[in-house]
Length: 258
Image (cartoon, rainbow, N blue to C red; front, side):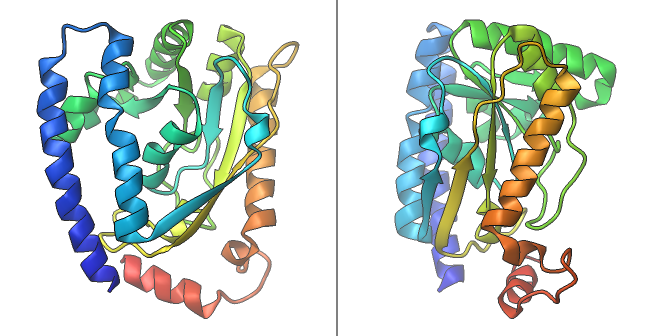
């Protein structure tokens, strides 16, 4: 059943995304925010498909923590699901993404027409400059900016070093940081064709004020909250860390994702 659902989802995704990509290339002359609004109308459609075809639901905790003005969101990154879902959970936003994604047929073409922050990750320190310069422009335009501080998708229960780029952007732009924890990778694993039905929990943490704080301290606060919340909400993902054997269901899911 999971395989059939996933095949149907892939077909529907293609049928919907290809026309949107061509549509995105045709509206290049419109103002950036108008293009953003039109192109991202793809998102609620895909969220409906994800729920009704894949059987993946979601629940948000801490929505009251979302501030009124633009902010930098520092989020856990486990799958492609959150790159779609965060767009319906938060006000209009953009992502820090690697420039090579813009070359992906159809999806990347449309992505390139949405105001965003495309960086050359091989540029070293210059990549941080790109994040700060482009990010400040997007925030001035009224967009929120989502940064995945671990830099790549991370398997459920794993943690990578939190890079400070998002916190530095927030500090220099003078906007708060909003930390986000979730378990999307349990149902939609990295590079896995087969997705599993279930409920994803997205937890939005208290706003972290950047005034009077160093960017490194802001980054550490965000990491401490996100990783603490992950272990509070999803202790089964950290059984090995606690010296316990992985649950049978976790092992089966890992096999399915490979």
